[in-house]
Image: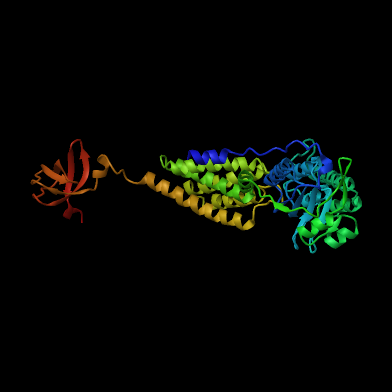
Length: 446
């Protein structure tokens, strides 16, 4: 258990190393590092890019190719990646690939931040309008002095204006089509690779990384007001994979994994409280709940959804203890589903509906079974003490007229009976009075 706790406790990530002092040599020596940014953009994605940039600069790499295939993601993580790219003196080449890939929403911002933006044939970018769920922006910063539908419209307008200005500035930073960048935010415009090249949104099209390196050779780029001449003809591609702690962060910051861990934690603690001394369910539940809370603080959690989730579980438990012809149970299931649907305040990282419905059904069944077992155990007759003797069968060792001796559960007892009982007859214990049992012949009870 100690090793597991240590493993889950290690979440310290590499910080970008200081910039190199010889920028003029960039692109003329060293290898071309290739990193893949796939799936929703989250905390692990930002840590991966920052870690890779620091490692590449320390290793003397010539440039870094950031291969993108993402539907978007968290605003905070996207901005962290953009800041890392724009602050780096190492040339970063944004490359949407392979064929069929996309750089949508947050991916468009990252691509525009790169000194060189490239795409493979059959790819697309755009649809950069920020999305909010539950009335909060992706940054989760509502204006407290405004409320209601009108305020909701004001928040949305502010969010879109901010995003449009941000993407427009990134496009203008490298001399790209800033007008289209604004349309991508305000109108959700998307482009194919060929359309993006013709409109000046990207710099080139390349079918694969080797073709990309060949196209980059001799290209001049500007980084921090300094001009670089890329010499990539002799570069070797080096794939840089994420370290174990970034992979672990990626697993934990997956909303589906965090959701499952939260449910395991809640159910484990419920089982432990219903059956004190079980140890393992309580330990596993507490550990899972702590890890889930760590994961949720990395994600845009809607706390109203979290409250509804807890309320749903409590109502399902209440249905077992206080039967209401299904009223509490139905309300609990409804609260559980609604809370799960709005739990993550981001469309790109929303919890799959199939997982929510499956967890709802399994959770309701599990809680019903566990709590019913606990109630049944509490109502079960005592397995020890004098109470267990009531109704027990035995044998009259001596004649009871009205007193004598009987053997019950292998023990010899003094006994008395209201009617005579011959020796050797079967008897049943009716009650206990001190050290004497009150018995009756088995035949008389038939």
